[in-house]
Length: 148
Image (cartoon, rainbow, N blue to C red):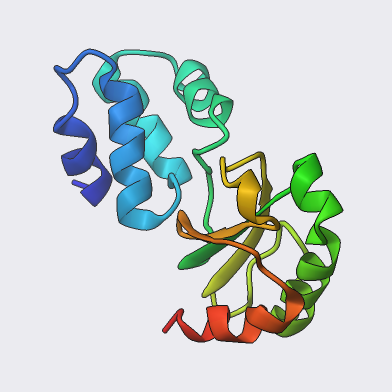
């Protein structure tokens, strides 16, 4: 029995349980393992296509492996105007990857996101949902050093 089954089973009889199970899987693994979608389909009695559709519909959910630290940068207009492109460039240089990629050691993933509701202090990045405000390229090494 896979570890996924134990997590998914906890939500089997709860209204909206499939989404809750996906939240739990993502908390555990930092993504939704593809194999877990097939297990969820069986447990919730839906087609694999529907289970996959739910997992991919919500932008918060990510199917497939991601780094231990998911760094997301807001790409809304206020962050863009405040210098998000320079922050992206600094992140890519420091980590040696491009947006949408994961470092070879599996430690970091870079992603774009929509507004995180911190427009008073742009540009904004989040690291595993923790917001960092007024980010500049000079702040990137310090932020990354917190990820140990």
